[in-house]
Length: 458
Image (cartoon, rainbow, N blue to C red; front, side, top):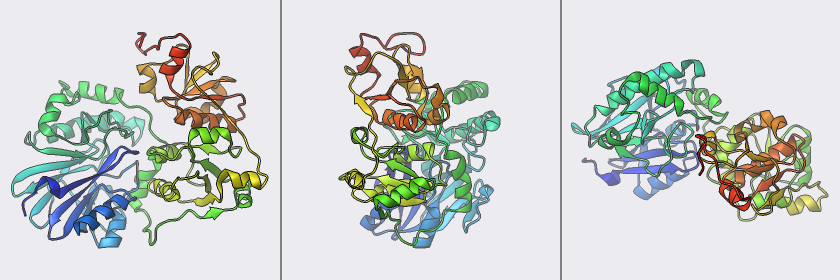
């Protein structure tokens, strides 16, 4: 069969900033590339197109999500395609550099592109002898390259040098070759901001500053300098993916728990995650609950701030989907989900449960005193309130003692700040208030101009 644009279906996870791909290979058979364990969108696409997934390819041992390849093998009998160098312990076809897979007319060629991980492969899709596109995973991404520090800081530079060679190899492909990366904007695997999730080799030669580096040393300096923090759970998932996630024989559920069950869970070392909007949490919540609003980034912050070894109960608000809580948790390996509070906070109050509140203030209502900014380093550097104390949300639990008493906690809008305030309250802080807004609003209300890391005004 010939390959046309509508034969490829991108499946974007906006929260993790990643893309999976479904390729219609003809004859009712499809190839899935870098599919996560949350296969709902992929299943919907196969139903729409009348496809069976015959092959499930992973470009690398993912750190930010559990692979759906094993599940696709169970559901469809798909052959799992992955690097032989990854030493996966479940049934798969191990590929080495240059190996090809016949997709029934189309061909998939493995290209060794280490850097993001040791065993990383890119997959070149060929229609006859024509290079249609390349699935680059965590190698070449739009206007950047994926991070090289996931195997430990002591190997960051070594892997950055491998990444340099891998990008040069990919850049040698024909200019019109489409680039289909896994990591995109919003990914903590080092994708820069932007809306484009695919590109071409030719476009990257013109716009990618890393490809424009005049030599290997410059490339390494630029790449390493771009590395920010990443979620704590990244350290666990590569090995989970090497072993293969457990097959799910039925959709996971989140049972309803009476208030007394939630109290018992807390007493026994479990934790409560309140997924309601920030304003609802502020108005009344279970003491000690962690506020993480159910949104696209929910999995990231769940995996960054809580262990996967304790049972979790959730407080869900009206109109929120408990199924979404489950899938976001499961795709990053959080399976000790005890359930959700039946009846929500009204039921908790009716059962005599203790309740706490948090001040949620506008910029005009916020006091002048200490301002705690919990955004990422790059956000803070781009513009912050003069005199602000900066502690990234991901680091806050370990440094709660450094937070000033009575601080106004702020991020860009208020959601991460409410999470931060819930962490501080759990650590014993009182008098914390959360800014409903961001630094620009606060600065304007208090007669300030934002500062940038270079010392200039914003």
